View (cartoon, rainbow, N blue to C red):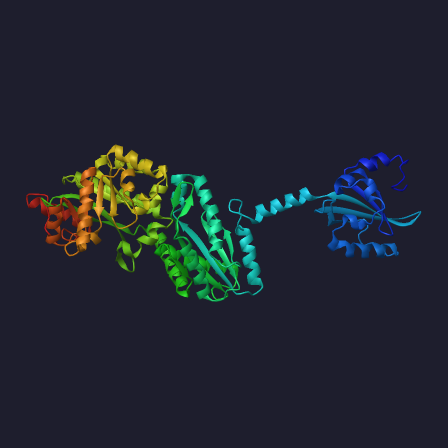
Length: 566
């Protein structure tokens, strides 16, 4: 049977199958096409039959096709016979499209003939491209994703190219999502996908690694100064706010950089070096740092301290000291702040400055924080049971306790376990906790506030907390940081800040505790401004529980619950 035999019983099948059939002779002339071929290429049968195959082959491919057909016509076996290959074809309108071709060769009455079964695979190609993009491209921003970035980085390092790397971490993006919604956050990320590449050379590859994490690959860069210049350019690009709808959003950014092969010969080591630099940049805030070998030593020290803290938690080496909070008018002890100390077996008693920054991010922070709460409440109950006048116990919270999701229940059960009423306890929060706007963070404090537990904002005035923070939290106390108290007698600006905090607190019905009082002159000035409660070395340093108890006894023997400077 020949494909042109219209009388064949298979003619109907040949004409109506979904695949295109095209037959040519040894001269490259088309001798047969079916209806699917007409639809595929956009020609009528009369326009195809008799024409050369060049009609449906892109110009750039005709030479190779014609050479192959000539070899087959000369008797050389076709290497493609019986195989399926993917090539490009040409429609009548001049557009190219991908096809899948299965070739057959046979000897007919008029010599060698060749037939192709052709399938349009445009949809499959598009689907493959979509899958590729999903695998290698961030769907929100269109930037390369982590997989694609890792592949590019590996390729550069395997080729032995000098390579710069930047890791970019946004400061404040979470606040945008929480306060303005994820739609605004997504639009902001899309705006970043435009601004970041625009701040860099054309050869820089910008990728989105995670929610608010970006990375930049600088191929061919071998000098730390060049990486620093790129980081600085990115930093400057954040000086202008992002206009998202009706909002003008100001974001901060922290950037860490590294250079291969100086800072790492493989991708894992290079990424780790850049991450160490990013960690340092985050500590400074709104800055960039390029990796230095000393950073690795600092991390080793930090890891060693983390291991020691884990051992300390298990060995119960932590203790509490207590610093009195005093009425400035009468000298009466009104409260005590429970302060953590580490009774290190080799280094002796360590103050929080030696370990607290690491402990706050340690896996054991929740355990230690809940122990502080329990131990402080136990001690407060013990003093009351011994007949001492009730005083408020102030306890500092770790972020881990808030993030655990059961703060209100933990505090309530702790108070109940030690037989204390809610007003016996005052929780102190730092700016890190206060700046978390999520409802889940605020709700436990509202519950505790309604129950009567006090809530103090520690070190007020030293950071970025806005006045709206005070409005959101059910605060009862503002603690003025010692840095303002220290210089208030010789620095008018510090005095003005203290006076402003006292005035604002009075208008809002909040109490104020001035920290770091060291002299009678500071005490007198604060009292004249309206401050009524203070804390500092003028009254006492933080004392072990037994010594604090002796101080209370001395005050009672003096016929009033007051103390003299130590």
